[in-house]
Image (cartoon, rainbow, N blue to C red):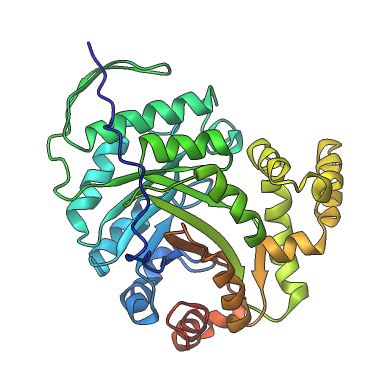
Length: 348
């Protein structure tokens, strides 16, 4: 049996007389504090606010695909994207089937973001071994890029074997498969064998190192940056809302190594040590304010927008916003929409 592999793409830059288009902006749904059934009014208004993408992710809460199916039903012209789905928690064929089914609902396109995730999301709550994350991600990527083109896939991968599978109804419009990627190995894999990568939890000043690792980007490839935002001028609230998450995620091994590679190891040394000692509250307190402020932006919507714009660097094709709104914003639909409008790309 043979295994289908994706065809390589050319590695030339767009010509200088064809400047890159500005990056797409998207919102991660559901918004924290608002169940998915209460999002229709927002989804239908997103294009008016300048947002062209709806993203969803998957860890320990909402699954990644149901919010996108709802989005496709409410506003089929929006691009829908996962950022990310863990490669261990679904079979390769199920991932292909799900992406192909979503593509039947959406005229705006589908971006399937997959990645290794972390043991806390794979083993701790799903009981699935977190084995060989790089190889598993590579193997699932190779399966998906072939299957979503309608190819017959069969054979032995390093981390699984496929007797034989062909997608009955491959998407008429290609589904892009991108990787959640932090360091050079995964970034290169995303751009050489997939359609690009999505990175997150980095400062705008760290982004050039990621762009250097990616190197020349062929036309059509994606580099997505996920940016965490809490649009409030109440700094104490913003810190309370973001510190527990940041202390938890920055002490996962992939993110610890990511920030060491970025050169931020010294900034985070104390929080890493306290976490390793079992002092999780102390690890939160040990996070420098400058790190919290840079990784989970806060301020007025206009101030946040100015900070987000720093991520619009050459090579970035999309900005994915994870927006944590203070409770008072949910007091009315008008206030919520106004906040997202002032935060977003269409603001003046």
